[in-house]
Length: 125
Image 1: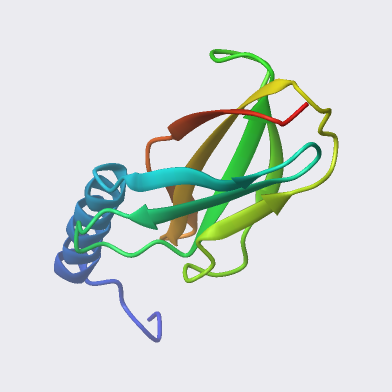
Image 2: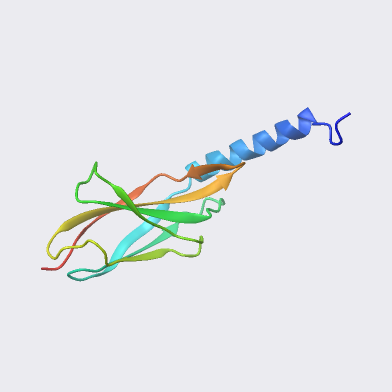
């Protein structure tokens, strides 16, 4: 006899709960994405999380020189309260960059992501 027999009802309730959380996170958005500070080789981004009732664990920031392709992940925050990022690496004066930010949370061992929110920033010449 297994010590803790699996209870299908409990397993199912957990699966339903996880599916609901996953759907909730996928409906959560990164909002108010702004670049309040932009200089020749520095960009500061700030954002908020939509009031969906679902928390995220952290955020990822990706960057590209094109709107729809070529993105590279440049930062993953270590906490959900970390809602800003200062980019000082790999920037050239007078160049346009696209940033996209998404929240993430581990649910039942798998990472679940919010949709990406994008912003276009041109560094000062």
